[in-house]
Length: 162
Image 1: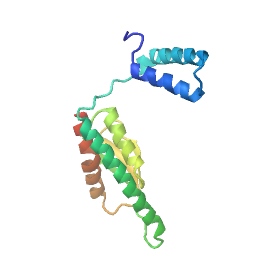
Image 2 (image 1 turned 90 degrees about the vertical axis):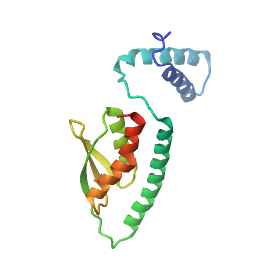
Image 3 (image 1 turned 135 degrees about the horizontal axis):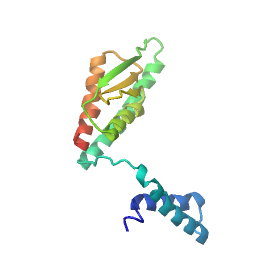
Image 4 (image 1 turned 45 degrees about the vertical axis):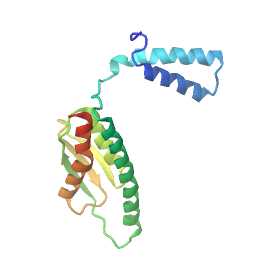
């Protein structure tokens, strides 16, 4: 059964999305959706890269809540920076040393930074040891590095055990 459905959840998701996009449950759509739900995972299974498992799911939920709150707060901060015409912005590129390993945790960290208004992940070093980010307003680079490491990197280390 594992050979026919290497990723059963993805197959089911593909089938449901196919039906929702077509807005039809006619026999032809059901059949084509089932064929695609079987073939696509079979053809792309070798492309999958095994990801580290989430070791602390409750911490992952807390991390998600923290990120959502930070996005809301950052939206307000960026709006205030833009509204105040007299305040001089100090944009800067900052290189953050990384303690986490693995492509998925680094990608989640970079995505978190990019999702937060006022910051953008610009590059990851070839050896995956540094993350270059751009911030709209930086008073203290070291403080920004400490904040990224404490608020985002440390929880990701706990979540993925890396």
